[in-house]
Each structure stands twice: as structure tokens, then as C-alpha cells.
Amino acid sequence: MKRKIYSSLVFTFMFAAVGLVTVHADDSVSIPDTNTVAIETSTASEVETSTENSYNNITSTDNTDNTLDINKSVKVNKKIKLQKSLNLDSESVKDMTFTADDSTVVKVSKAGTVTGLKTGSTTVTVTSDTDDSVYATVNLDVKSSYTASQLRYMSSIIYSEACGEPYAGKKAVGIVVANRMKSSLFPNTIKGVLYQRRQFTPARNGSLNRSLALYDSGRMDPDCIAAAKEALNGNKTVEYNKEDKKAKKATVPSTITVNGVKYQVTSIAAKAFANNKKLTKVVIPASVRSIGKQAFSGCKNLKSITIKTTYLTKKSVGAKAFKGIHAKATIKVPKKQKKAYQKFLKTKGIGKGVKIK
Image (cartoon, rainbow, N blue to C red; front, side, top):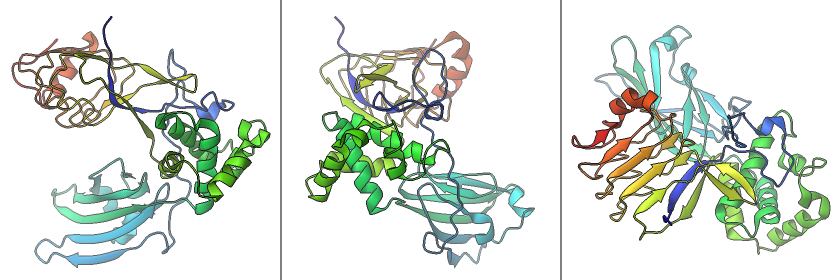
């Protein structure tokens, strides 16, 4: 029997209400032949304007090229508009391009509206479309948006629902709750979501109250708290670790099971298989939509890669994802995507001797 390894797979929980709670239409997005849903959360409802939550400070001006250097902050799931900060009118902003160094931390619209996605720091570069010059750089700090009460309730529901599950299962519960707070079909507070009629069993049978007491006593499982923080901060991915470093063949699973419910694996983590010298063969399922940076870098004996998914693009495959694989490796790709895959995979670190067919 072939041995399988699931090496640090990160899969975006295309997620719904797990088997833990009642599934509603807003919990899912239809994907053919699957029971999974995209976890892309709904857009933040309000533009952050409070000086408490964001600040605008022009720290320096380059006298040579007049490039503005601005510091700003925004909370997770909140928005700020850069147009006013950069002294741009409605017409001028149309001639500018806004680019975030790290698109996992913030999302930037064409009009320069920034949405905080998760805690962290990044830079948004503003360039002029007329002459390609850099008009401004905006240094962004994305801060936590949750309160102590939200962390208390989120940690407690995770403990009640998934205390015996691996970290992936704990975080999945948190993601469900966080997404429901943003949905128009559910209450917009964590307490309202948890105590909504016929939703979460722990809220009905009293186990949630016991978990809250455990949290208040300072004896809450640290993993439940960590998972709660990630979910509240907008982290939409779950890392699944199950390694077998002695195995020579790896079949990335199309689904994993948490709490008895299957979820689709849609992404392979950055450096998931990096520097695995024993790995010779990998199969990537049709469910995968993205591959992280250096996912297979340094796998010098990796000679055979089968890519079944048709969803990959140059943007969804990270830099150097296949750098350092065997010099004469063969990558099999779907026939319909052959030309497109041949073109962009060559930019992801593979050598000239690698065949893509």
C-alpha cells in the first residue's frame, strides 16, 4: 500500500457550519460535487474613520521625487480610505494604482480603500499610471479588532465544541462563528450568534456556561484561546500537520475530516514540503486552488508531479514553489490548461530540463 503524507497542508476551509451546528445558506457557496464552501468572509460593513482606530501621519517627503511616506493603522475587518490622506481628488485617484506588498494582511481597492484582513504590517505603494512614478508609500499596521468579551466567548465555544479535536478542528469552529457575525442572516454579536435558537448545542445544554467558567478561572486550554484569536483576527486558513518524512510518495488529500465532517483541501502551505530530500512523487488533487511560496523548494529528488487541479494561476502559485526539484522532473497537468500552466510554472523556479506535459 502506498504511504501518504500530508505535510503541513494549509487548506482554506471552504467552510460551513461544520457538523456542529445547523447549516444555513449563508454559510456556504456552492461548489460542484462538494459539501464545502469558500470561507471568504463578507466585506467589512463600515469604513474606519475614528482617530482611535486609524491615524494619518505624513512622516517625510522626498524632496527629490516628492514621494509621500505615510503611516496608517486599521483594525481587522475595518476600512480606511487613502484618497484623502494622499490629497487626491476623485479624478486624480483614477490615475493611480494601489499595490499591497502583502495581500493577506490588507485588501486594497482600485479607488484606494484599504480593508484590514488580519493582524500584521505591510506597505501599500501608490504609483502614477501616467508616468509609472511612485507617488506615495503607505506603511500600514493592522491591529486586532476583538474585545476581551469576544475572546472569552470564542475560546469557550471552541472548547465546548472541539476540546478533543486537533488545532485544525478548534480553529474551524472559530471560523464558523466569526463568519456568522459578519452575515446578515445571523446576529452581529458573538453572544447573539452562540445563543441563537437551535444553533449551538453547548449553548442549549449548559456546557458553554461551564466552559465560560473554566475560562474565567484561568484554566482554559491555550490552544482554544490561540484558535479564537486567529479566528477573530480574520485568519481564514487552517494548518494541518501530519508528516511522514520517510515516505517517498505524497498524495495531497482532496478532503480532510474534522468532527466527522469532510472539508475540501484548497491550498498547500508555503514551504509545506520544502527540503524533503526523500520525496520523489507528489499528486496534487483537483480541489487545490493555490500553492504557497517554496512549497516544494529543495525537493531535489522530486521527479514526478501530477497536478489534477484546473484552478491554478500565476498569481495563486507562490514564488519559487518548485525551485530545486529534480533537474529532469516531469510535471503532468490537465490537458485544457497545458499551455497556460507551461507558461507560468516556468516562472516558479523549475529548471530548463523539467518537462511539463
